[in-house]
Length: 440
Ligand SMILES: *Cc1c(COP(=O)(O)O)cnc(C)c1O
Image 1 (cartoon, rainbow, N blue to C red):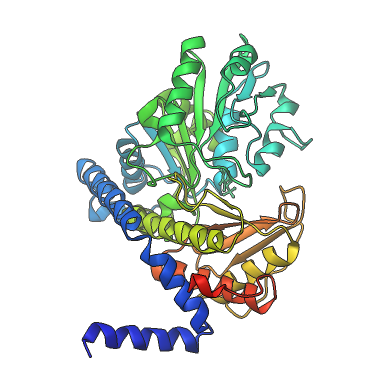
Image 2: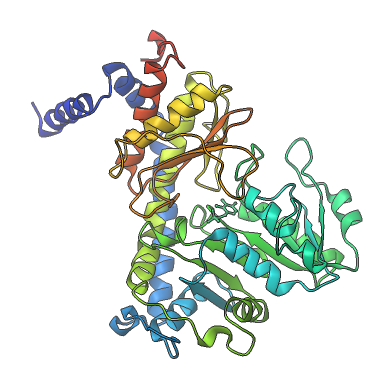
């Protein structure tokens, strides 16, 4: 017996001892055998982005001293200021704001919007409804402190039925009051396609062709490092995301980033801290090592998450569930939607993901009323960083089509285990009656 065959058997025994049946394991291996080439191309993207990150860190002369944080006001925080230059360099942007004081992705987006819009301005989304939590930021759903309360209006142009941009509709929606356009790269909790950087570039060119002074902001959440370019490479004036998603590499315990035009980023800094203080204050405490090391790991962590998403898509598509994106489709974010059509399916899937976790594997996720969302949401996350969705996690709103949104996985083996476990749970709960013999 070769060493490799021996370890395969041992591996299978270990899976079995952790609750994965022969059938689920064999079906998983069958699906995997068809994905080798795609995994290779993901590894190439990761390699490219890894070099980009190292290059940016070297160009900005990251030193050991950068890993020390500051306290109090945080004046002259070398590590913070250097990290912001690293982000700017990586994104080919003029400036960056990368802070532990930015509490989450929604906060980063709200900050970018509220600091770059003024009363009387109009905000436009040319890609349909924005992410759920932004509805309250904008005031689509009435909310204390929304843009609407400050006299900033909002218009939206939906995508066409085929997922394309409604160029005529967009042209008609742009007025002299349109100050900022928000473009969400990832589909979020929707079943529309995620936008590639190339498509975002086309949209930005079109908008700038109508009015060159319109600011184009991209909600980059979940998209970082999935391609070799970022929205700032195709004309975005602002690009915004969360550090407990892709760019934090699973290590950042908090934080968000805004990169883009100097003026836009300065506006955000003055809103985050205070007019007059701007980016000069903001202690980093003990966060810097995880920000740097997380960014360093982010390309390969994102690759692991991408592999997990593709594996899940093919596994569930093979069993007849609608999946977005489709198993064979190219992808530009780490989110995979699987439509179960029933609450039982969504819940069983999330239970499986939870049961595969390194932390809190023994708890049972339940649907709850989450702030910022308009229906109950179920979330599975056995994460080292609470709520970090770059870690293996699944969630979904309890409303039709009962889609589970699956994302993350700091390592590919963990993502694989979680997906197998979810399938196992679906079988145990009768959501799936059996895996047809033809698939094994
Ligand atoms: C996660 C996400 C947000 C909000 O980020 P939070 O950190 O959850 O506040 C916004 N937009 C998109 C597309 C997201 O995926």
